[in-house]
Length: 259
Image (cartoon, rainbow, N blue to C red; front, side):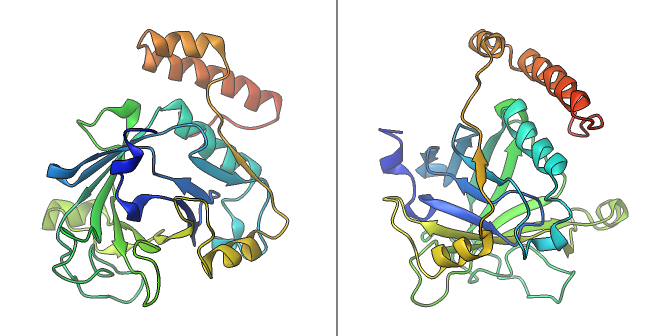
């Protein structure tokens, strides 16, 4: 987006592969958000052409491909657009936490301790329903922690941390989330100019094989567009849910759990 793109931190530009993500989603583009330098905060609206999902299951899909079925992928793809999500990425100093054996994990164990403010290596990530920044849409703690290897372009590989724990941990120990389950590597395969970053670009192509991708290209329903233009985001989401459930029923799918 002209006027915004030039201010986006270079590390966040380009096309990222969600490498190792057990959920059936493959690519993400984050470079059309707004950077607030004083707050070290980056806000990204969910937008057309931002996400890509597989239309099939790659041979070596994570988690044995259990969440790569057509129904699972369709639910995730629809949920992102129907809820008009916004994402906030707020950078802070990396705590340099100890690297614990799986399934344990604590935030900040992949980045260099003390980095993060000047060089943007560690951030908290949240998503927000309807773009409402006043509350987070997830219970678990999400992070991005730079783990670029020597010789890589800065910002090439990130640990996309997902930290959680049973409710009694939080009630007893406060915000204790000692398990890292579902985390993956956010890996840049194209830079902001569309040039491949090796070896990750070739690795991604080999991983996908002949499985195609699909993207969300925007709201094509006039009723939904009219609702959004009036500011009726919640009504638009409800309308989309009804249409989606009707389509799901027609295709023999059960009611969508996202709604």
